[in-house]
Structure formats: C-alpha cells, structure tokens
Image 1 (cartoon, helix red, strand yellow):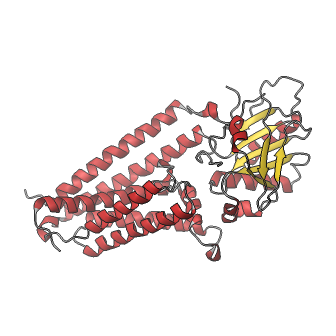
Image 2 (cartoon, rainbow over the protein chains, first blue to last red):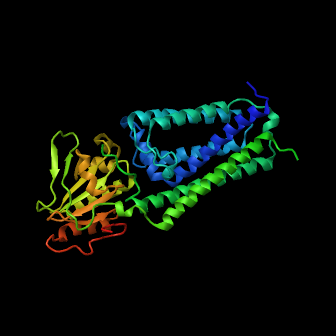
Image 3 (tube, rainbow over the protein chains, first blue to last red):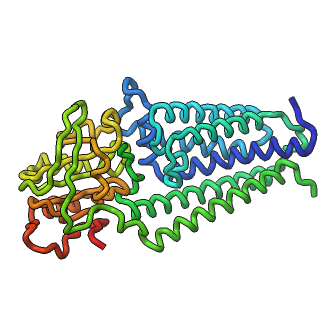
Length: 194
Length: 201
C-alpha cells in the first residue's frame, strides 16, 4: 500500500528515521559497554549451546555492529525497501528478546543502551518494544519515489549524521559507565535481594 | 533547491536525537565531575560492628548464619554472576585461595541473582569459595549494598575494617590483610585500603 498524502508520508518517514536513529544510538551505546552487554547476551544462550570463553563477547560486538550497520543503511539509503523489512525483523527480534527477558530474567538490567540505562526487563519495557516494532512495521509502508529521492551528497550527509549520533551515544554511555563505577562499587546496579 | 521530504524529516529526527544525547552526555559528565554523590551510601561504616547475616548455599534448604565477632576474620563479597566486575573479583579471589593467601580467613560470596545464574558465569561455576544467597534481605540494610562488587573486611571481633570495591589482586589482598590485622580492642583510624575503597564518611 502506498501513501500519497504528505502528512501520512511524514508519519511513515518520521517513524522510519526514528527507529533507524534508535538503532544507531543503541549500537553505539552497547559498544561502549561490551563486557556488560556480553554478560546479558549469556543470559539468552541456552546451556546446551554454551559458547566458548570469548563467544558471548564476540556475539555482543556482532550484535552492536549489526545494529549500527542496519541503522546507518536504513537512514542513508531509504530507497532500499528490503532494508525496511530487515529493520522490522530486527525490532520483531527485540520483542522476542524482551518477552524471554520478561519471562525468565525479570528485573535484570537489559543494557539495551549499554550503561546509559540500567532498566530491567519489565512489562512496560515489553510494551515499548512492541510499540517500536509496530513503528518499524509502519515504516515498511511504501511512499512515492519522489519523496525519498536523494543525491549522493544527501546520502553521505545522512551517513555522517548517523555516525555522529552513534559517536555521541558511545561517548555518553562511556561517561555513564564511569559515573556508575564512581558512584556504586563496580558499576553494577543495586542488587535485588528479594 | 528541491529538498526531498525524506531528507527534511530525517534532518529533524537527527537533530532531535543529537539534542537528547548531548543532554545525556553533559549530564553524565556532570556526575563524573561532581564525583560520587552516593559514595557515602556504599558499604557499612568502617569501625562499626558488622551485622549478622543469614544465607543459604545453592541447592541447600538449610539456613546458615554469619555471626561476625565469632573469632574468625571474614571477608564478605557481595557479587553477582551477571556483573562483569564481580567475575574479575571472584577469579582473583580464587587465585589468592590457590596461592594459600586466604588461609585462616573465611570468605563468603553473597549473590542476589538466583542460584541458577551461577551456571552462566565460568568464574562463578568454577569457584571453590563458599557461595550463599541471603535468606533475610532485611539483615542487609546495615551493609548498604548500593552496587556490586562490594567487599567488606570484618576482623575477628566483628568490626568492619574496610568496605569498598576492588578487582585487582593487590587491592583484594589489602582487604584480606585488613581482616587479619584488625584488633577490635583498638579504635579504627585509617582502615580504608585500595583504590575505590570507601569507609566512614
């Protein structure tokens, strides 16, 4: 289905750019807290498929790099429709991760934005993930080619903007990690004893 | 000059995200510049009597009791298998134990994660140190565990000699020595060891 009304196009394109920017920020922040994110990755690897010693760390970097690549490509190459589907699939995977996290690891920090957030797997987080997946689904809506026609300079400009967002998220997450270490033991959030 | 609708929307999205993350960045930098506002809430006060604790070992129903002041110096480590810094600490403690440097010292690793989480960490699943999970969280109030890892060095008289965070062998060794060297009959003056250790404020 193609939308032709300008307002609807703005909604679709706004959703598309927002989720692409979110991927860039999440990827950049995760890269700044690789050990923390790797420890979360381990939670989702079944014991039967236990990876070698460095496996979770490598997988964590691969996930963060994948988010960065998908976000950058989706932002700077809007003509590629398959990218919209790929991004929607990624957000659908997030919903699955949140559902598993909420079921099995409730309250444990998700580290979706590295050290920037120590929010745990909660019901509200799961709802957020579903909403984001819905926005990603909306972004697969076809818009007229004229609305997404870009010059080479536009592509490069968007790529640079995306890189800037990832870099700032990386810096902010690094700062957050250091602030946490200074403020509360080794930086791991307050334990839940109950 | 014609600007495509996508470019206009994307520019606003990028600007918005840029603004948000710049604010976050400055906020975090501000926290670092100010130092730790919550450091005073970390760990029990040095010189105070350590509170007794009840805990269960994994796969055990029996409630055990840690009674500081029973004549045995004790190093309590609040750690979690999902905390990367804690894994480093447990590895260091294991190496010190192997080297015989923990002789005469009771070392207790207290976790808040469920015991099933021990399996996800190589360091925790391989450790031969005593691991327990507090069975009565209210007993932890005096320990002020605002984050992990947190080490609490308790001497044979039950007095807290040092409390804070440590991951390197030299720092951990200092906590062990604090447990052993303490004498509750004398006032505690400067028991803060190592980097990042925090005592009475």
